[in-house]
Image 1: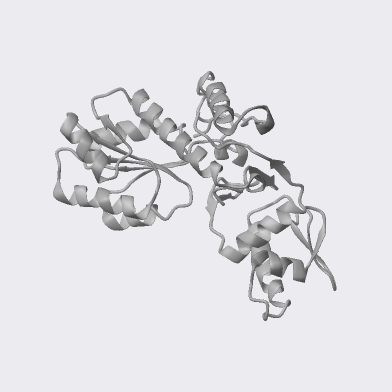
Image 2: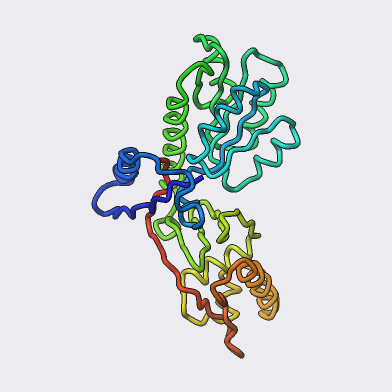
Length: 293
C-alpha cells in the first residue's frame, strides 16, 4: 500500500500555514493514485500515506468493502471487534482516524463511542445504514466529528477523512514551534518531529520512551557534531543529580534500537572521553506538512 510520491516541501514565508496546507493538499489531489505496489519497498513512500485507520463495525460486508477501498490510501487498516483490540489500537502513535458503525443503535456501541472520545483526540466518523437528522445530531453529541451513510460513495468517506485529518494537522501545527515541525530521515528511518512518530526502514512504527526520543532529537538537530554527556543529559532533562555516566546506558539502548533495524552502517559513534556523535546522514524536511492527499 503506497503512493510512491515524495511529499513536497512548502516554504512557509511565501504563505501562511493554512494556505500552505491547502496548496500541498491540492497538489496531491490532482495526482491519480499510482499502482499500490509501486515503491512500497521504501520507508519514505510508506511514510507518505495517511496514518492508520480503525474500523469498528459488525457488518462484515461493509467492513471488507471499506478495508479494500482504503488499501493504498492509508498506512494500515485495522478492524476492532472486541474492546481489548480497540483499547490496544488506540495506543498507536500512528492512528489517523476511526470509523464506527452506530446504526441500528446498540447501547454498548453508543457507550463505546463516548469512551473512545474520552481516550483519543483523533477524528471519528460515525456511520450507519440510514442517517436522518436526529441520528447525525446524536452522533455529533456523542463525540463524532462527522457522519457517513453506509450506502454512500466511499469517495465521500475518503474526502471526509482527509478533511478531518488535515484540520487536525493544522490545529497541531499552530501550537508547535517551527523547529519542531517537519520530518527527519536517516538510514531508512523517518522521524516526524511534530507527532514524534518514528518509522523503521521496514515501515513499522517504533516506540521510544521520553528519554530516548529526546536523545534522538538532540542527535538529529546536530548531525556530525560531537555532543558531550552533559549536553545529552540536558537534552533528556534527567535529574541534575544523576551521574553523567547514566547517559551511556541511554545512548546504548537507543543505538541498539536504531542499528538493529538498519543495514546502512553505524548511526551513533562513541567519542572516547567526550561523548557521542551522530554519524548517519540526515535529511531534514523543515515545515513538511503531513496532510492527507
